[in-house]
Length: 339
Image 1 (tube, rainbow, N blue to C red):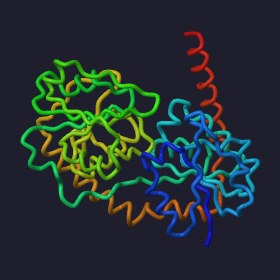
Image 2 (tube, rainbow, N blue to C red):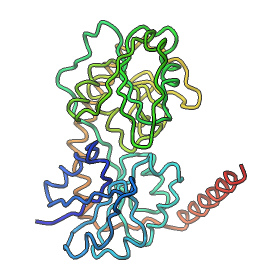
Image 3 (cartoon, rainbow, N blue to C red):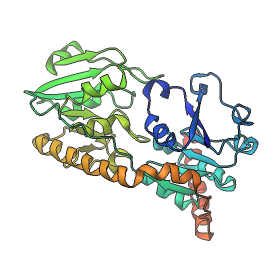
């Protein structure tokens, strides 16, 4: 049986973010997992860790495959699965380094996919959907329940307060387990009382946390950007209305006031929740339809990508776009240094 080396951040041992993808690959391949601890100042996976084992593909999950790494790899069938939230701050520029190495890209963000195609890279797009819950747990809530996971400092309790507004009448569940290197500023005693806040102060297993989230009517998307967005997708699959920044990948699933609520992260304002019941129903219907599409079409794309040969897409217009992108990037960097 063919073998795949799957290189992943060790943090995902806990979050299980890419288990769905590994399960897909395991249908056709033996998948050997390599856990990179460099994000936490630990051991970094090196080419010699995977060389000599006759892999049919080396799969980089979120971790960027450096030029030095690729050049030393014995297996030249390389796939990179970038996460939008990791790449957006760099303006996607570093992906240009992959042009000469025939690295294939699997993108779960449509915006990101189109950007890489414009660079001449071989990008395949797949839109992931989690399996919808068969029985919704939030249909008989007596009061509006909000689930807020302060995962990053970018979406603080102060932001959530603005989104819910001063006239909010319900309760808020705060799952107080921020991501590594992030902290959470706790609500005041007055806010705890006014917003009827309850806390979950421990890490829950994946099954436990999904069970808790889908009891809520509203889920606050925990990040400004997402790579796939497993947390908000799981909430939507349970019929929760997600309140989210108007950014990928969230806005590639959420239509404002139809399958959720979108807001400007720089100017958060009170959300009109008068149509919450309708939005919850639309959200669930959308996720059922999306999951059927995933199973019938996009599900097999990771397997097909391993087997398909690299397709070069670069032309004169591509290089013109690259030149413009690099110029803009340099100007932006210069401005940041001056400021």
